[in-house]
Length: 202
Image (cartoon, rainbow, N blue to C red):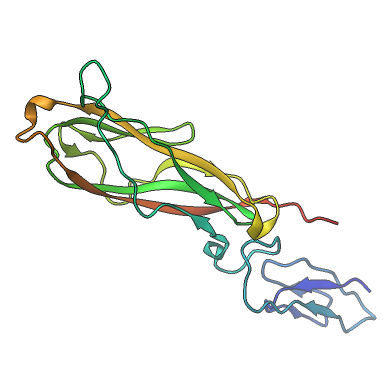
């Protein structure tokens, strides 16, 4: 007899041979048979680094490492000192058995921002101007792609990664002191790619 694999989802088999199901593989039962077997997988706990079936909440696949603080410095070595930002790369790592899309959700600045004529956030093949002439360009829910990370090749001891950095320009004539400081909060939103799966080693 054919069998039905179910992950704790309700499946009703009718005596007429019709199967009622919810997002599962199915098998038909036809008379004179009036019974059917269902295999039930019981998953307790979750390891995002190990390939397996998707949980009811796909966000459980998120296992990503991001920096909690980055520093941006003006470049004092150029022909016009401190008129641009020095490029420093920052790394985001994905440990998950699913790929992950990293989106920019918001960017909010504060402090002395007037000298900043442009501030650009560069990801893996993406570029977004987050500030222009001292003002923020984004609002909450911007949902702009920063990078896409492939699934981790072999669990928690391995990862895939990509980098981001900031570039931009500064109007030093707007300085009121030889040193100015601004701060900002960059919010990222992580979205698992359920079509990207780490191959299971035989």
